[in-house]
Amino acid sequence: MNIIETIQKNLGFDTLKKIDPNTQETMGEETLIGNSAVAQAGIPAILIGIFNKLEETPDLNLFKTEQGKLLENIFGKSTDTVITQVENYSKVSDKHIGQQLEHIASESVRVVKEGIGDNADEKHIRNFVAKNKPDTLLYLPPSLELGSILKNNNIDDRTGKMEGPVSSFMHKIEKAFNTSDSSNTPETTVNNPGR
Image (cartoon, rainbow, N blue to C red):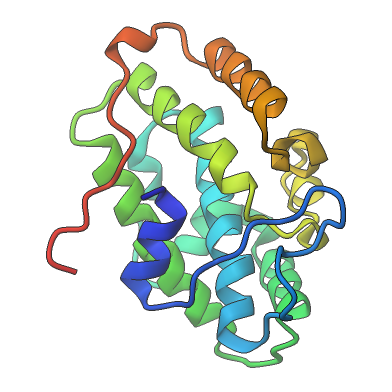
């Protein structure tokens, strides 16, 4: 189970859908609405925000903050823009959407910290991000324009959402460049103890 599925199941949301790299829409015929659409946009966006921050500064102490301020901790001055983009994507205009995203952020940080483990060094954190970020990008709706918001063009790159033999090979090369020693690489699956 990947990190997206773990968070989605822990929070009780419907299964998230991968983004088709050709159409840039979710795969499948049905259109996502309501909480399903909030989860489809919110979970990968928040994870990418966390990963982006950990790439800049690989330190889990970045996410120690008071309740209700985690989104701001992850996205900084862009928090309101991210919330608005999720509202636009989900077509849900609700004053509580920020609270729902805070709840998703709290669980996402918990799962990331659990996956990385206690007393992790920079290398361990970078390896975790390098292994989990490509999978997370497969679910990120491009209409959120998260790459522009976070000033990271690689996030919105269509090639990050491609799968198949050639794409898998390219993703492996990318991971190899992002991690210096794969022999001591941590396990990336996240256990789901009793939840």
